[in-house]
Length: 387
Ligand code: BGC
Image (cartoon, rainbow, N blue to C red):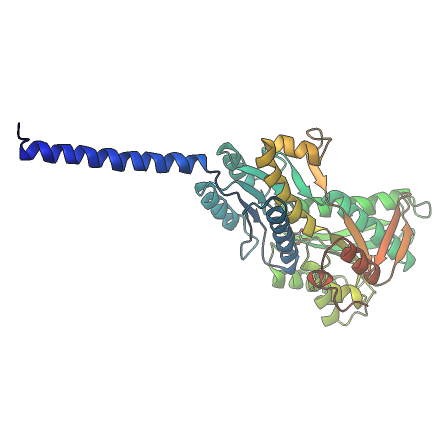
């Protein structure tokens, strides 16, 4: 029986649909079976040489993972142009939409970040904090400096050095100027608190003083990440209090801002006991010239490095909990992995605070060698010209 033309066309159409449909189904099936590429984003707070060091740690972890496991992963460092929470959040939203594997966030605003962190976690993205925490969120871990402790150490050192300079006198006044980043950031908030608490504690415990001195805190003035505002706060504090004894900056750019103000007003190096944060190309000159008498060096290289490794391990070990337990056995009782700090100055100095704590301030040269030993390129930290 001859097949009608229309039946033939129908048969052909059915065959074509079956072949194409089957092919597509096979394609989607194999795509689903193929593991998705691991994409990890490490999100900083702003633009500063401090963050270049984090980026180098991220890159190193990516390289090691690729070499060790032959797996092509994508570990990226991204940072907003300004220390503004909204800029970070639009990036987090975009990354949630892209369904990246993992996120490590340094929240500019600890409270505002809660919604974003929880949303990312809810969408199945492994999300942790680093450099600065958001303790109210569901983040399983924070990797970074214990900022209260770091600020406290800085405060102890400032008190002892101020005392050596004769600024701590019974019945006198100790003037402490503080310029900080936004206090919405957990790290700045904790550093300032730690710094102030340490000075108050020294005043109480110092047998030569026994509380008999007035501590005048000038600030904290929040420059909100604006370097020129940091300089103008430092200038106005010094102009209003030419006899300032101690100066503190909570973030990396404030040590150089204080130094600029001190130079502009012709203060000799070392007259004011300046305590700054971070060893970077911007912060080494104030330390080397003797303006910053104490520099609190963070280990931000390892923050970026561990963040990537931890998220990668979570994908291999069946979840972030398993990966953290290997990294931090005290978890979940402890949800912070302290990367530690080093106190650094031009020359090595060992002090004992009235609280009984011993403080070691490493010389810049010694610190350079130590960092080199840990695999951190001194140039990254601005230490290349230190002998
Ligand atoms: C802080 C960072 C900050 C940077 C520059 C560092 O001390 O840890 O959170 O972004 O300073 O402000």
